[in-house]
Length: 171
Image (spheres, helix red, strand yellow):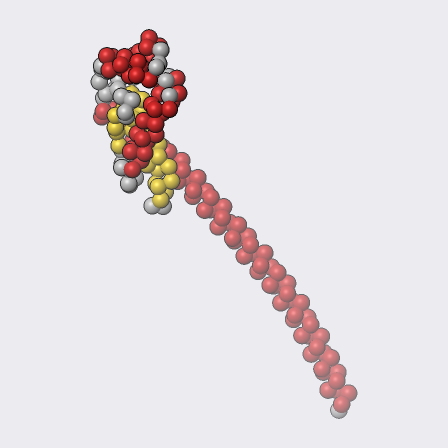
């Protein structure tokens, strides 16, 4: 609620969200990397890359948590600075989950593994489908080539018969 109803509704605080996402992504280089940062809006975000065949195809983001009890005065000042309804904003802050950094990293890692598995499975299915299509095209080409060869053989037999008749007539 805090990001949807507050941070992303204000251009300045929404810019902090984008900055945080870019910062997280920039530090994710290899499978299994997990990056956790406190965004400029005061919440903790995390990310892990989804890398298939050595290509970074996506980033799984999770977050809007706290690693410790938040300083409510800081969030009260933030509400006033951005023009949020202070009471509603502080209520949204109170709803944000507090979990340990180790647990958050474990959750991100698990989610990243699941996402990578699903993505890699989909990629492998696509490759298999493409290989099957190529094999089907090869089979069709082979059938056409065999049909053409049968036709050419019959033409050659006919020409051979005709040439035999011509040779017999000359004799």
